[in-house]
Image (tube, rainbow, N blue to C red; front, side, top):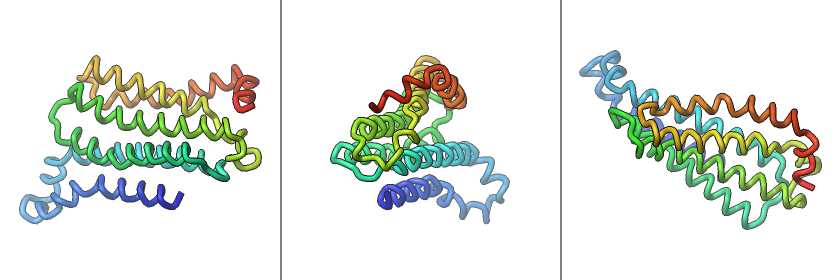
Length: 197
């Protein structure tokens, strides 16, 4: 967990580096002009900061239920970390691309999708190996939530490639993932409880 937290902290710091590089321009051009000229970089920073923060919170939610880990969990965690560390690059790409393209949309949303799928696979692994969980850990995990987020991100990737003009606005579909997951859980509580048994 400490290694994962440190890696996430580094990734969030890397998001800010493009803005640090333009800070000296404030002296000659003024703050307003620099902010205007770097509006896409600022938006990409804010969006990616929020994405990494949400992924980190989801990661913590899962690992608060984990008492131990095996090699599979460790490898899946490294996959999750790789996607987190790659996100500042993807964020920089969208910040410096004037118009959204299929490739930039797929790169950015696909990176977030990879993190989400890695976390879903970690959850599935620990649910299948109850000895890795703390007591009552299974009750704290909701595969439906993580699965719905991954499904929404897969849809974002598809729509971003099919209709690239939507750009990163397709990520707003993620707002529907939690309410849909809640509705599914309320309809099938008995099935959710039996997934881990």
